[in-house]
Amino acid sequence: MSLEENRAIVRRLIEAINKRNLALLDDLIAQDFFYHAQPHEIQGLDVVKQVIEDEVKGFPDLLVTIEDMIAEGDKVWVRLEQTGTHTGEFLGLAPTGKKIEYASVAIWRIANGKIVEGWGVYDYLDSYKELGFIEYTEKTKKLFAEDVS
Image 1 (cartoon, rainbow, N blue to C red):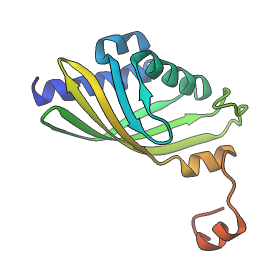
Image 2 (image 1 turned 120 degrees about the horizontal axis):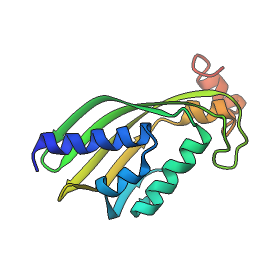
Image 3 (image 1 turned 180 degrees about the horizontal axis):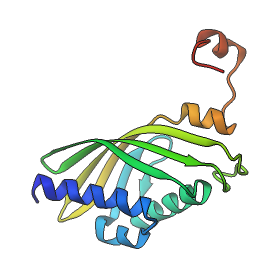
């Protein structure tokens, strides 16, 4: 596939998430898809759908924006910005009503017109602190005084 076709697949993935059209994922992601990410790796199309459904339930206004995109060979690299308001349960945490914003970088490998593998790095720290998943210790507050409120 051409680099532009690979870019289009990734754009369609982001559009499917933003429009909550998870049925479209069947056309974009391979059944045996594998995603290398922290804290959890994801394997299989059905698991991908569940992860996205859980995030959308927790953040019904979730919006994923492509900030940068580069294609090379069978891979597409994207820098993303995600925003959303925590108005539904997420990872066992009751809704807080707080708005979050975080950045991520993902690399998608495409074969035969579908995303077959991915790697991701997410900057959840501030968002998780905002939601109450993380509490800074006194030592952390002293070390990062200008960054911690």
